[in-house]
Length: 105
Ligand SMILES: [Zn+2]
Ligand SMILES: [Zn+2]
Image (cartoon, rainbow, N blue to C red):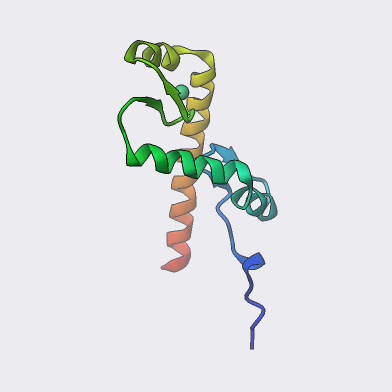
């Protein structure tokens, strides 16, 4: 009987698409997914989906005052850097989902 199937044996994805972070080990992923930073991000996203008005950059998880400021923000180096990370994470996610499907088939 394998009754030791505890939560430490959960296989986490090697990335967090909310926080745009990559993990080198499953343990790092576990620490992240149970951490405050990740939890805060979920809460902000949840608040945002409850009231989607306003000018919000989902990639940086930050709120801007006006459409103009949002447009300027999207040209800023800070945002572009995050956006590059976002694209990388989306690619990782695609690969991850694809390899998981292969295992299940
Ligand atoms: Zn996270
Ligand atoms: Zn942004």
